[in-house]
Amino acid sequence: MEKKVLTCIGCPMGCELQVEMEGCNVISVSGNTCKRGDIYARKEVTNPTRIVTTTVRLSGGGVVPVKTKEDIPKEKIMDCVRELKQLVIARPVQIGQVILENAAGTGVPVVATANKK
Image (cartoon, rainbow, N blue to C red):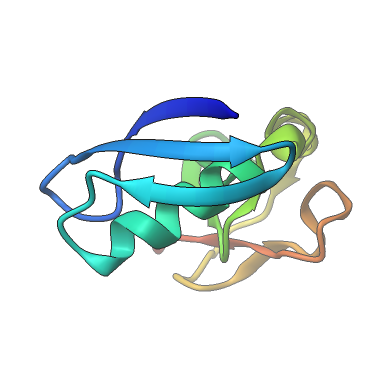
């Protein structure tokens, strides 16, 4: 049986979680003080995902902050960032505007997080 230790990022408590695994299956999670810790630990050891935040260049200069609308698989982060690095978009940009429809083939859109005139 394999044991993994994680620090939970599900809430501000930052609990130290102990995860017991047998192969790819989670047997138990302990150390969490709330339900979010159990959910986070199970997901983190079986299918880790993250929200990607970065910037995209604007034509005429400057950048606009962007983020994935949902979390994407951790192994797709660099592919997503590479795609966004190649983009140059025209002004104006509105908060929530889709900048990239399908980040790194995940089906998750990337949206602007600020207005730029």
